[in-house]
Image (cartoon, rainbow, N blue to C red; front, top):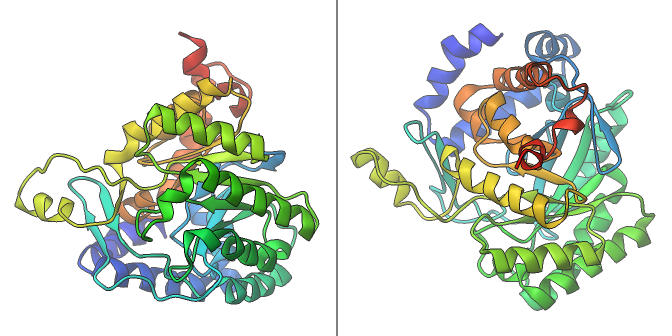
Length: 369
């Protein structure tokens, strides 16, 4: 199936509109996961060797996760499991269903290895997502892959009422997922990033963590931040989130910064509004991870995301402080084979460095300073 992807899948996706290609891929996975022999073929073709690691009191089969935004409906959980992810983040979900921003709203450029999106939290709403996840969980046997739900604010909800919006979604989804990511960093919902500021962030996180305990407790709540923050802003978010009881942090979301244009096609691409992900984000996201790890003395779990397309990219995030990592754009450009490539590559990195476990590698680069 890996060869089939290289010969057919990648060229077909390359000539399609980005959002249509994404939708068709999600639909194909949905069909595949319904048929056990096909799920078995996914495992045989793409699943990597196990590389056990632990984060936020979870024991994962490997440290590689799927970033939010890929599976906005949580409709392909069993397919992601078969492909071999250690954990996934589904959504983002809002309290009310919403169609998102006007199309076109998703763009890709292979020269930059980057995507730009201004989707605007298009999703079926947390009630429908809970129903989908309930059906999926009923079919899963001996689940090992963990599921995080990404929570966002409905477009129609004012920031003053954001906590209620997030908490409604958290309560609906609580039974069906293993943890939550409070997303206050998407650049595509007007005013959302203002929730990263001081009192607003404290109020939101206090509400979400209180609601999680009210639902039964025991499921971690993390916060997802922007890469477009200065050190003072990072300090405030770190201190506020830790004081509120956040179990960890996802660093980082997409960026509003842009690389230098390479040609006319590149210039047209980077002129698009929205959040950019992929290779140009790699360095900045690693900087943020490194800063957080140093600021917290390595005592606060970090999920690293941004520009990871090889095992070396993932390793760089880990040795700078990430306990686990997530991918998105590299799946678009390289296909599902990138999962095995990264996980097996990390296994080799451990051996090369004489380490017994991945947790020993977390923050290794900082210890060498």
